[in-house]
Image (cartoon, rainbow, N blue to C red; front, top):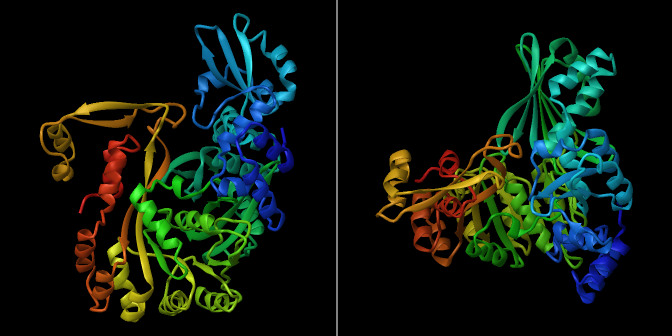
Length: 551
C-alpha cells in the first residue's frame, strides 16, 4: 500500500503522532530541498519507522504488527502456503492460545476480506485478525520462503535459463534478505563458493559449478564497467542491482587467484533513513561529547578504527543532525557509501586524478560550512584538512589507527604541525562493531565472579568480590540462523581534546602519554564501553573479547 507524503502527513497529524507546527516546518523545508517528508521526519527524530507504521495502521482501522522486532519462526511462516503469502503479501504474525486467534500481517489491507476468505480453510478453528505491517518488513519475511541457493542454482541450470543473470539475481536477493554487507565469489578447482558476510562474520551461502562461473564474472564486469578481456590484473568498479522495488549499489573488487578470478562485492546502503546519534549505541556521556563537538563552527572530529568498523556510519549520523537548509555540507568519499538529500557528495576518481587532496582543495573553494573527508590517507590530505578546520570549517574524517590515542602520533608522523593540530582537533573517537544477542533466543545466566574469571581469565580485574552477575547469551534460533546473534552495535572510545591535551600535543607525545592523560580526564577504553553493553544484555562477553580485549 503506497501512501504519498501529503496523505502520510495528514495521517500523522490526525492520529496526533506529529504536531501541526512540526508538520508545517517539515513541509516548508522539504519544499525547498530534495528530501522527502518521510526522510526529513526520520532524520529530525520527529518520527520513527514503527510510529509511521502504527499511524498508517490506525488510519485503515487495523492494529500494527512490528515484524522487525517480533519476527515469526520459519515454522510459523510456512503455515501459510508461499503462493498465498506472495499474492496477498501476508505473514503469519502471532497466535493467541486463550482467544484461539491468529494474527496475520499484511501491507495490503485493502485485500483484507479476500485474504480472510483464502485463509479460513487453513485455520478452521481460529478467528483470523488482520494487522498492518510495513512493506519492507513484509518483504524481508517473504524472502524466507526461498529454497537454498544450491537448489535454485540447479533449477536455473536445468531449465537452461539465462544462467548468469538468474543466478546473480538469486544471490543478490538472498544477500539483501540476510542483511549481508559483502558477497564473496571464491573459485576452487571444480566449483565456486559463494559466501555472505553477515554481522561481520562470513558464512557460506551456496556453491556454483565452475563451468558457469565465467559468464557470472563477465556479467559483473560489464555491469561494473570493467574490462572483460583482463584476467590477470586487479580491477575495481561499481554496479547497481535493480529488481522490482529492491534497488541497491555494490562496490566491485576483482582479483586474480590460482583458481580463477575472485570477486568481492560490498553492498552499499542507498539511504541512511532513521540513522541518528541515538541509534549508534553511544552512552549518554559520549553522545553529549559528540553533540557538543559537532555544534562548534570549526574544528576537526576524527573517527578511527579498522575497515568495516562503522566509522562512516558514525560520521553520517552526525551529518544527519547537522543537515539543515541553512548550511552547506560537502563530502569527498571513496566510495560514496550513503546518499543523503541536501548533502553535496563527491566521489574520488583515479582516472580523472580526482584524489582526496585535490577534491578537498576544490571543496574549500565551494564555500562549505561542513566538510566530510572519507579518509585521511596521506600527508597532503592531512595538511589541507587541518588548514580547512583552522579556517572556519567543521571537518569530519576517518583515520586508520588502532585506538584514539594513536591517531595523534600518526598525524604528527605525517608531518602535521603540532601547533596547528592542537588548535584544530576537537574530538577523537575509536570504535569497533560487536554482534548483538538475538532478541528472540536471548537467555540469562547468573554467575559468580569466580566462574566468569575461570572461563575468561583476561577479565579478572573487572569481576571481583562475591556478588553474582547476570550475563546473557543467545541460544540460537531460526531468526538468527542459529548463531545466537542478530545485528551489530558499536563500542566506543572517546578522547576530548582539552587545554591540557593541547599543551601535550605541542611536545610531540607518544600514544601512551596521551592515553594516560586522557584517562585522568574521563576517557574510557573500548573494552569498558563494551562491558557496559555486556552487562545490559546487548552482547556477550565472548564477543567483546573477540573484538576488543582489555588493555
